[in-house]
Length: 370
Ligand SMILES: Cc1cc2nc3c(=O)[nH]c(=O)nc-3n(C[C@H](O)[C@H](O)[C@H](O)COP(=O)(O)OP(=O)(O)OC[C@H]3O[C@@H](n4cnc5c(N)ncnc54)[C@H](O)[C@@H]3O)c2cc1C
Image (cartoon, rainbow, N blue to C red):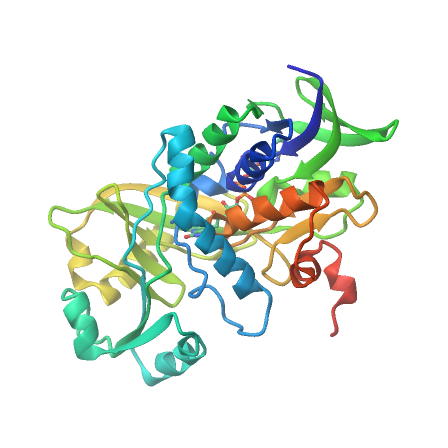
């Protein structure tokens, strides 16, 4: 292993790999270190929805414009990454139908309908689009742009593209400390020390030890998510169905994902019968034909939660060449491109929208009005 890099990215999930890709495009010399295999942790459990609209519950925050920019980046990235890596990210059009089963549901969707990219469909319109839907559905908010990708392939595609452009990846290289020495940083790994001018912490929910080492008092809390992967004999669904945080996502590989549970503060990586029962019930409520699906497997992962549900993306409060990109909670796949771009812009001292810098800075809690 070479011992000195311009940038060391710690963590090879979708966030670390996207950061490496954007830096590599700018010809920056990068090494990515991961404790295990690239993309094998939370990233591998994600459904892959690019839900810029469907995941945004407040119209006033900086989250929507940031998420929307990231979502738009995928429109071009899918071809750009394929050309460099030969890996198809499984980009699937169709969008999301956020279903309403009651007047209360309809009311809860109102905030989405102010956006020009969201359309209300009544009962007969929606049934024309998805004939297999439950007869209890009253209507839906249709979000055409909230498409989906296959997360493991997307992460692999970012990593291989970065590698093609010169980034080096080191798997099974756990980082246990960062120290400052003569103006640079010494990244201490299980395979020896590496020197870096900039360090990026992109360790997802597993950031506690490094945050502590760096004097960052924020903590990431796990929100465990379980999903069922199914396949079908005849195609039954064209659009993603979404209700009450649960969804059925048709993928471009002949499979569907039924997800996902939300278990707070649970660090285990096992799938429970309770979780599976809950998901089957939710899937049948949306799509009665779901009971005929064949189970292909289960997925489980730990969403990296933050105190306000938004990620930490920015410079360390005291060390400007240490950058943080963790805590992407339910939306790391969606937010990966813009996070990669933003960290790259920080490192290259380029201009970044001040609303985004303020909204995602790691020490924002102390500046927030209560
Ligand atoms: C069930 C479920 C469904 C989801 N669905 C969606 C979805 O539809 N759309 C969406 O946008 N998001 C979704 N998410 C969220 C998304 O998966 C996460 O936000 C995203 O994967 C976080 O990526 P990451 O790179 O930060 O973390 P990770 O993928 O966990 O990567 C972090 C990496 O850091 C490495 N690491 C940790 N500590 C160290 C260390 N000390 N040294 C070296 N390496 C280290 C780990 O090995 C790991 O590979 C879902 C999540 C779950 C659980």
